[in-house]
Length: 259
Image (cartoon, rainbow, N blue to C red; front, side, top):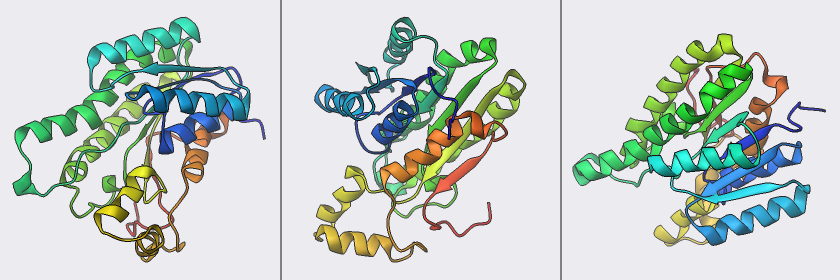
């Protein structure tokens, strides 16, 4: 099936690991020209090499910290200069740290706001005018199932990420008549390094940890980054041409709510 992504320019932030890397790989496999960024240059280079080897696509790898306004401006400018205007934005960033209300100070609250919400605002601000002018664009943000259902111990994520979903829902109404589709994707438990770090914290083997993580998931297992990326690639494609303003969970049925 031709998803209509060949020749499109896709920018995937936090693209060196996990779900971001899988999204970049999936987009490149569909013929998109892909730019990825991350803070760690070694992991970034390794991800770019992997994507090139598996897809034959040209990949632009740019070190950047999306919590810094200057980095976002430089990232988008370099992508436009070397690949062309951004058609698909996958706004992704690491999640805020764990913590309960009494443990969190103002600096941590502000850090979560900058990481999850303000970085998304800045990235969209940099690419949206061009998308509107060309009357085609996809803005996708990777958030968390905490948008739909609070996760114990993740107060910052539970508080800030729903604000990103509100931003995206509002923006979908503003940008829809200009041909720009705006969606939020909410991963549940996906097999990433971040998830697996919980095994050591709980002093469990990988197998024991994954068994516990899977116990309340209707499909009986955690998802893979590739399964998550398949949904993002679809939303970026021409085949999703009537899908905008949604917050879609990819969680194996973990969230029990109706919406």
